Amino acid sequence: MTRNHPQPSRRAVLGGVAAALTVATAAGPARASTKGRWPTEFPLPDGFLPEGITIGDRPYAYMGSRADGAVLRTDLRTGAYETVHPGAAGTASIGLKLDRDGLLYVAGGGGGTARVLHAHTGELLRTYQLTATSGQFVNDVVLTGDRAWFTDSRAAVLHGVPRGGRGGVRGGGREEVRALPLTGDWTQTPDVNNANGLVATPDGRGLIVVKSTPGELYHVSLRTGYATRIRLRGAESVVNGDGLVRVGHTLYVVQNRLNLISVWSLSRDLRSASLTRTITDPRFDVPTTAARHGDRLYLVNARFTSPQTPQTTFNGVAVRL
Image 1: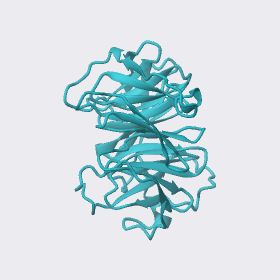
Image 2 (image 1 turned 90 degrees about the vertical axis):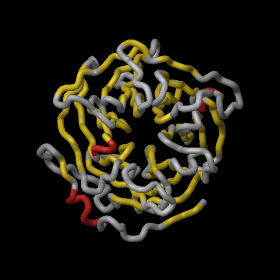
Image 3 (image 1 turned 135 degrees about the horizontal axis):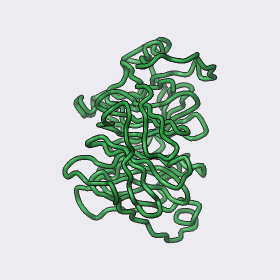
């Protein structure tokens, strides 16, 4: 494994960046945190092209690369990172989620795949070919029930991959991927990214999916695939919606090219969502996805509006919930 110990940030001094956080509404009383001295900005390799981030119970973030499918593990306490999966030419790691059993589920982007990795060793355990059609884009993933659910931004379908404990990985058994067509209020817009980030509903029976263009939220039944549009109050849309994080009935929507996180209160019946505040930060540079650890959200800056070259610098940042 390749290890890196970060130098002082090129963009901000770690000790002072927390003061730069701007929240669009008045902040409440400060909450005590055991992470007060943990870095709030951390480096990634030049040319890494980050997109996804996931964090489990332990203080380690896993981040995927659009450049070659590599996966890094960053120690949130120090900012030091190591390469746990080297990737390969022609592959990509977009959204990813860490399961409690140590398996990492990775969306393969334009390759149309879902990959399962061993989070500690980086070993590739299984590859599922979700799409056989060129032009489709497997974007993000969430874990709920007995499956890992993947969005395809260019097709009106969700893909359900069996989780490892059901034998698909550990036992060497063969279990089918479930294709769940999106119906109901869902209308697929051609030639743009549609379904992107997703989270489980509070009761675990459905999913909340963001449609990046034109910027809508949907409640999707896992039984039928019926998608019900969630009415937005306080803002017209969540355009450029990317990664989602849900804490109870509070939904955080990363709106990448707008450089903000919109925070929504979901109604109990999931038919509406009310905007409560927005989070901005001068360190945001087209953040794509977020993961929660304690009282922080950690995000990666994809820098889509900057040159995407092997020399382009990348980083991640943390903000308070």
